[in-house]
Structure formats: C-alpha cells, structure tokens
Length: 282
Image (cartoon, rainbow, N blue to C red; front, side, top):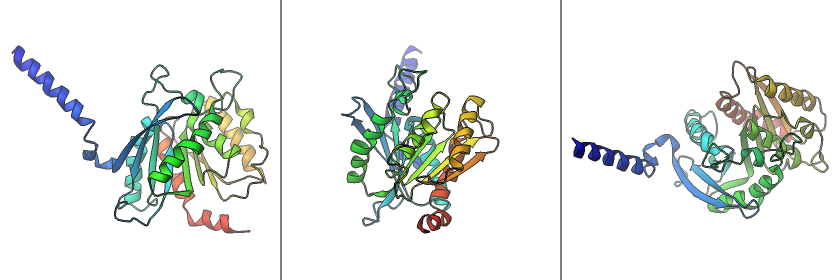
C-alpha cells in the first residue's frame, strides 16, 4: 500500500511538472511565447507572454496591431483566449496579445501594481510609479516586442482594469501619442482623482488619432464608480481632448466582472469604421 501511495504521488508530481511545458494543449492560448524582461529603469523583472495570431508564420509580410494587457498574470489567460473566440467570429481583427505579469498576486510575491500603475497620492506613499512604468514600456518593452515580432508600432493598444485602468488614463493624458488605442475598464481613481482632471502641457495640442475607451460597471463599488463617473462627466464635456473618447456603462457588471465586456466593446470600437472615419475627418 505504501509503495502504491508513493508511486501515485510521483505520478502526480511528474504530471504537474509536465503541465507547465505543454501549453500547446491549451489551444485557446494559441502560439504563446515567454520572455523574462529585467527592467534597467525600474530595477525589477517582468514576465511577458506573447500570443501570436493564427496564420502568423504563414504571412511573413504582415504586421499586426498589438494589445498590451496590464495585470497579465490574470488577464492574459482570460483575455487572450477570449480574443481567440472573438477573432474566430470576426468580431475583432488579427492582433498580437502581450501580457505583462508580476508572477504573483501579492506584494510579498513581487506584485508592484499599486506602484507601477498609479499617479501620486497623498494617501499612499508607495503610489506614484506610473511615470517610471510608462518609461519602461517606451524604452524597454515595446522595442523588444517590435523588433522580435511583426508588431505595428502605429497600432499599439493598451488595456487595463481597476488600477490598470488608472494607468491607461495616466498614459492617455500624459503621452497620448504613444498608444493608438487605450481601453480603461473600471478605472480606480479613488485616491488621486484630481491628478486625472487636469490637462497636461504638450499633450492637449498633440495631433493624434488615438482613441480612448472608458468603461464603468453600473454595479461597481461606489468608491470606484463615483470618481470614474466624475472623470467621464468632465472629459466628455471637454472640447480639446487629445483623443477620440467613447465612454460606456456596463449594465449589470461589477468591479471584477467587467474586464471581458470592456475588452470586447473597446476593441470593436477602436477598430470600427465609424472611428476611422471620425479620425480622418477635418
């Protein structure tokens, strides 16, 4: 009996070890590549997953829009597989999907999202790393992706949820020309809303055709929903926005359920004929 017990444990261990090597059997994740990127500017490393679209190897002259997913440890497996379904149904175009992961959900395990994704806040001394994280994307990550893959630098898209949504708004306000498309899902602005209500020198006069899609769940927690709606109200009424702005209520969704709905609606709008026509109009 004891021998059988240890044999079973050994078989389970071998199975668990091999599961990490056999992602090809999770066909919903497509052709996924892994990179460990040690940031010189930040002094920390990131786990980066890259899913290539179907037919990538068969179309050597084709370049692709690229979607950068914040909180990639959770959102990459969720949204890259969802992208595959949407793409198969021709809801959204072929794209490269990039997930940026910390490899843990906890600060103790190395998750620094509360620093990387946030503008400064008087309430939290560890907030305020968004400028450095933005520079990491500009100087280190996007060059890696755009030299290693056929990624179209003119069609970068960034997606973020909650604090990740805060970073999407941060980069849309301070450097609107870097990403062609921005999708902010339930942006969490509860500790530093005034930062996001201001216009920033140089960015308002940028001649860009970038789009910003902001989604707020109707059943989001009031501490998140209230500041998000205040942001939407102010910026929807502004006449000199540096991007085309689309805002939506996600009916019936909560703070945690909204990300897939925001991803689908945001991607559909960014690549819609309507938006392209608006961007090209004088």
